[in-house]
Image (cartoon, rainbow, N blue to C red; front, side):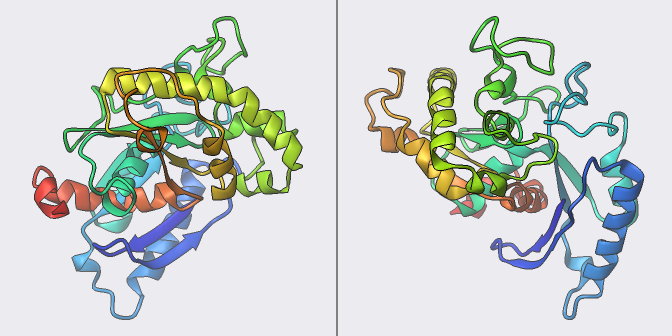
Length: 296
């Protein structure tokens, strides 16, 4: 769990990393309450000027058989009103979104998508998701589950997925897929553990992931006609660079006339990616729909 306090420019003024295994609501909220008190005591901080709290949690939300199953989810959190509890603890408005959506917002504020009006952020986390910007607006869908591309079936009859399907995209393109291929425990491994894996072993995983990743980019381009697919998330930057360097040739699509470097860009990576995006949520909510004016 990562808690950050940022200003309107995205500069971090406070950061706390809390290592937890299988976090449960009661203990987690108690720990967050302690950190909130710690932040309130920071010299020079006027808590009344804090816009709010953005929270990122892995999706999908409220989908029976998917939302709390497997290592890509938070087991034990189904039915918990996270926003209300955090509002009680902090006294601030709380906005909750999935990791891919907040990463896309963070990229729009602070990253390579600052000048883009339509893009898709492909978030490689424990699972796989997409944050979608269309014509300057974030698209979240009816139940905030838009972009759950990890559960698109790309190989019918393929690897079993925790959702009950076989051949889901995130069973081939995700940190979980990389952990399993490289012999790491997907419930305990951290993204940085992949840096210690033998290079040739990681390279073999990349080769297995590329066909499905190309399929995903082809689908996203054809459905959304986005200016760019930004790929980022929690995978360590040197490893993501290796994946993207081997990505061409891309499939033909509605964006096929553009060079691969324009069609796919590397976004922010590392453990702070989603946290920085979450911190941008209150800013986004405060200024939306005046978001375009804010970004000029």
